[in-house]
Image (cartoon, rainbow, N blue to C red; front, side):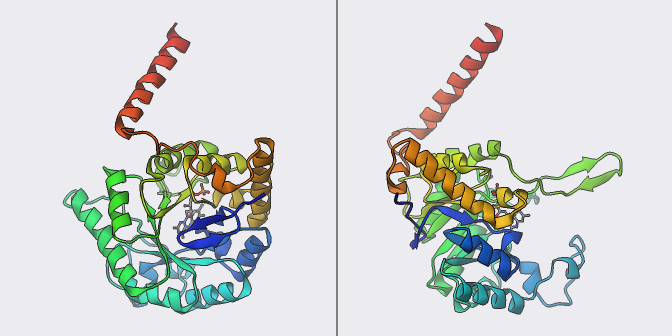
Length: 321
Ligand SMILES: Cc1cc2nc3c(=O)[nH]c(=O)nc-3n(C[C@H](O)[C@H](O)[C@H](O)COP(=O)(O)O)c2cc1C
């Protein structure tokens, strides 16, 4: 069975990639992921606030000792990871301004990373900032980084752009080698006992695949950039669904963190993918990829609207007779 796929110009032995997360926080976690069969590992992100001068304080941030890693330590770990595994290691940078990206993108490349993922975590909390401003910020960062490095660059996207398809096209035209759908924005709750804002990060469930699944299916075949799905993988089934929708690669974090065995769960995901392919007479991931995408749909907006009406009608029939 041929599980090979191409993602952001890299040849991957299978489509299962470790998403940026604490799985990569040390060499041991990265090696275990590689040993379990992961096709590539995306490092946890180096945050813009971590690369600023040590004296700069950020009032809402946790104490620096709790989350701080120096850029030197980050690139040292990255370089060791590259040397000690035979799978691609992708660096990850997180920031919200255009400054500094070129420098740290170059350092990522110098450390030997085979790719770079940009995780622009920006919540549009400022009503003075327009959608166009935010789109421009993303594109400026991508342009700066693409000019600075030769390694492939992936944009990890927020699902909240008003025209995601148009944004994806702009990233594509600006030279993004891949789009990762989607970044997981934590959503605050209120703890009524403590009367405090609750800032826990819930791990995903399989229901979370639906948003990225729709967008992967809509974008497949319409861009040069490859597509990675991220969000909701719990078993081989979600991996299969993302591939059918048109993903080149599937990233996973929650399932690995939840499994207790860490990245070793990767082996289970790959086995389940293989089993499904065998049971359904697929010989290669290439054959599977995008076979249920919307590539052949001439008018995706109308298709989506028709489905919406169908869903409402079906609910009415079932529940109200
Ligand atoms: C504990 C934890 C830490 C994460 N840290 C990062 C990070 O540093 N950078 C990043 O781009 N994504 C980070 N993510 C998001 C994951 O890479 C991934 O996009 C998201 O969890 C969705 O995949 P999943 O449903 O398989 O968890 C983190 C996720 C979790 C659960």
